[in-house]
Image: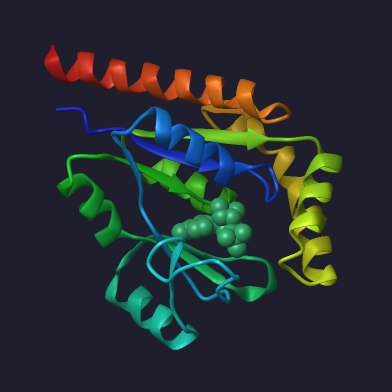
Length: 194
Ligand code: 5GP
């Protein structure tokens, strides 16, 4: 039997992945985001267990050693992020379809390793990314520069993913993303029934 699809959404910081994913979840209620673990500090307005499971370095490394992560990376400024297998299982147990929001290397790893993964790269012009990161101002200036340099590199990697959605207009990008996801779900349901 074909596995259920797992939607992996990636793209540079500031491309609007978070906003797009929220809009997607409203339109396709069967989807649920698997909450990642991270060692980065909690931002104002974030809740432990909702945006992330916030762990300290020691706890994160212990989870790596237990084999708790499907994939994990060290991102800019050495902060760790990882996809918890237990979270993906929780989503499946709820009878829902899993969405992962990952940076590029993690998305490529899942694409290679998880049968049924459908990768979507969210792109936006670099100037737009820079403006959004500076407006959000949740990182230090040095860290924003690092994220912008990384974003330039990442935009060149878009071709490595199954789909690319350009987010220069939120309504249009939401429509495109929703259509792709619905098409993939329909395909998976048809294959499962045949
Ligand atoms: P932020 O610190 O802005 O919340 O996230 C930074 C980057 O980490 C984003 O590109 C986000 O997609 C990525 N990210 C979040 N969770 C994970 C994860 O579990 N694994 C990987 N590889 N990247 C993640």
